[in-house]
Image 1 (cartoon, rainbow, N blue to C red):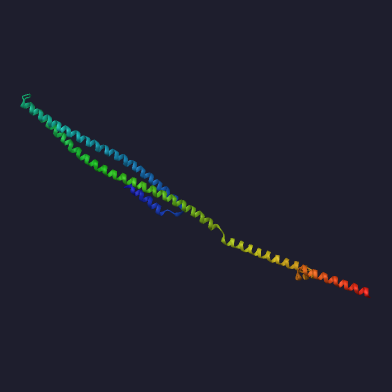
Image 2: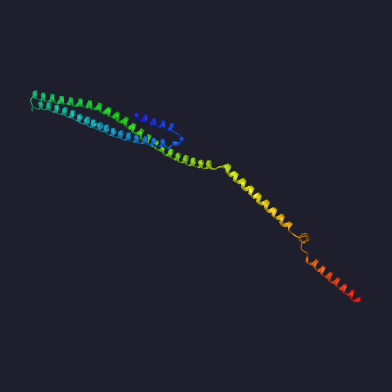
Length: 241
């Protein structure tokens, strides 16, 4: 069938599509689904028409069966009228013969219509199978299309993220970090150098004071008392002399 050839073409196009152009198989799939829906619409129309012919044949069969039975009943009535003397035998035979011919015609119509009805019924079964297959295929392809669109979105987002990561110059980043590290080390060395220069500018007294540290209060009191005693002793010596 041309439909399934078309589906095979779409599937083949998907298989051979370039990964970077995923929108192409999506569009082809959408077109394939639209074509399948058109085929489904045509199949439904054909199915309705064939079903109408089947119904018409069935109704014709029923009608002709009734007509055949009616002609047989009339032929019997004509023969019965001969027995009752209501009609001449030759006239009854002629009319009954005509009725039986009509019955035969109706039976022939029944046989013909029955063959047609059987053919129509077979065609209806085939068309119903095709319709069911088309509906199943359309549903399957629509689900496949939803999955494909979702995969395209994920692939596109992943691709963009990977492109951003790839755009980062790792070597340049490392170079910047090394330069910053050198600058920090330079600043630390400069600070240490200034500290050395500041120490060189101190007086010897400052160095002594720094080495000794602050004098405890108790030691300062002892020194003051000793100094006063020394001054008092010197004063006594001056007076005695």
